[in-house]
Length: 199
Ligand code: ZN
Image (cartoon, rainbow, N blue to C red; front, side, top):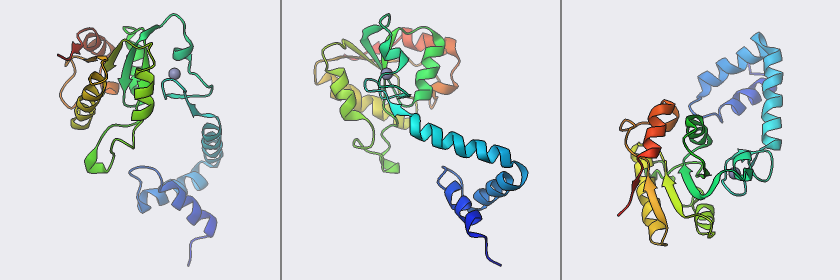
């Protein structure tokens, strides 16, 4: 007995998700079509909507539905400070602290040579262009305290300092291996306040 083509298509489509193998994809597909057909339609529509509407902010590279995101458009923010994070979730975590009033740049990843993610796979060129636009006076590196996050911070620090920018790294109030999105707002706020400037 062969799998109906549309069901096989759905299973194959679900396998694009990270960490989802053939068995999980099958379970998800059965669940969607058998147990939750309304949810399945909602999911399909949400994917199409998000894919159609989302773009990257021209200044900070985060996801938004307009050319510039709300934060970049906000005149009240300190436009001389640029906080570099790995993902939009990190930006949201820092925003939740209410301790930071500057702007952001979202790399959409981190350097991870073992996974084949090199300097061409994260938004390095746009970051350089943004950091050197004459408006930015301090770059705060807020990548995670994981091996990859630290390596990314080190690389960026060298790159940006070589171009005469003032660079700081958020302080280690966070545990080693810690990811920003799991830190509580108070700890993260303290890490921002105690950020260290490179010599
Ligand atoms: Zn933006």
